[in-house]
Image 1 (cartoon, rainbow, N blue to C red):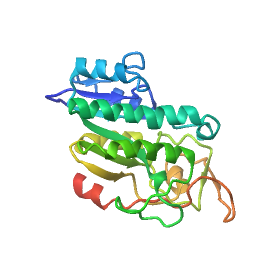
Image 2 (cartoon, helix red, strand yellow):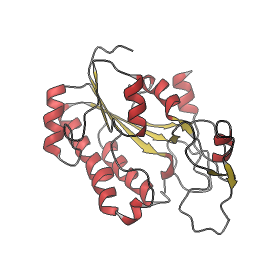
Image 3 (cartoon, rainbow, N blue to C red):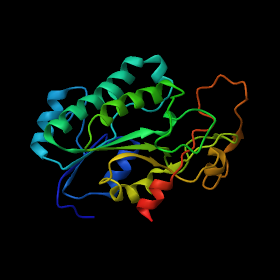
Image 4 (cartoon, rainbow, N blue to C red):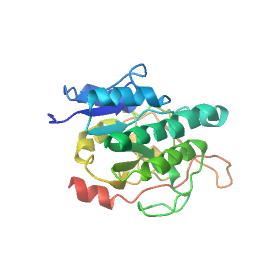
Length: 238
């Protein structure tokens, strides 16, 4: 794939960033290291972006797994996912760079499901709160796209998967195939695969995955049903 303009992708050494780096090696796509672009240092961001002069910045950098770190190390969660993203927004707005931000489907309320982009939001865990904090900053900048994503590695990395939970898991590889069809959109867009349980999703590629259940009165902070309505996505990529 060839581009007539420069694109910067933060978090290139992360799980999804590594997939993009392997698939897209255009001379116009840049995957800065933390040394080149540190999202916690606004001067670092501005210096790098003034040098590269991208038209689009895809923001993947931040803290995701392990989920427990968002409870035990809230400073890291806040610094990377909220303050770091806010720093990115500040410089993108200053330099008029289109910003594409990867958020999460976990920000939707538990149990209802089939959430549209305009539906109310209510995160169920600290990870989701931290991503929503990033969304707040991005939403203030109109030249932006927020992708509420439910993605994972291929093959499925876990040995167990919930059978009574509904979600929209999609593999990194499959998102990579359609990402550049989306980057010119603005606003908010749900991004994932068909609604199904994590177990049904995983068993197609991981035959040894074991079925587990969330009990109705469980205090788990894993969402039971944050499934998304993907009508807008399908209309764009059809």
